[in-house]
Length: 123
Image (cartoon, rainbow, N blue to C red):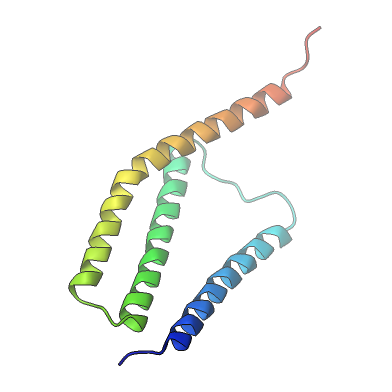
């Protein structure tokens, strides 16, 4: 069964609007919470947890989009989808150490700036 081009565009548009709506809802809920942000784990365990959560969530979202489009819209399946899963997992395995290192450097710089801002000015 082949879908018409307007139907494919409509499906992709609806998917885009659903993802953007979910992101907007998450941002709105985050801004609406009164008081200080919830406590996070500090140090390496907290950083690894944050990076792993971001990587796993991003991978799952990518796989949902790939399966939805290539299986549902384009009608491809089987070996192509297995290749997409293994290729994306391999890419994630290569990029994750670099992402962890850059996240650590950014967090380290942020803490240094905060420490400098708290120090009294000497004259």
